[in-house]
Image (cartoon, rainbow, N blue to C red; front, side, top):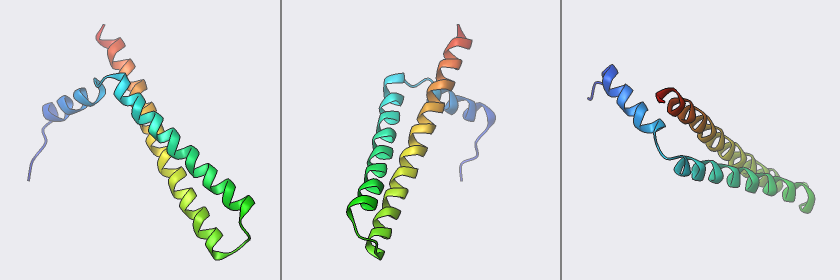
Length: 91
């Protein structure tokens, strides 16, 4: 079992937030794409399918994809904000 010390945690956070913004933006973009695909699935299931258990399962799948995409996009966005703040404070 590895025990983390404060300096080790500080170093890991420093590496995480000093990643290039291009890498974090790719993560953000992927989250937005998943979010959009999930919304499209929900919309199409509501408009093109008759009401049934199959429709509800497809909508549930769309909601899961939308939720995961939203979380990935928001975490990447928070990472970009903190990264910019860290770079600003280092100057």
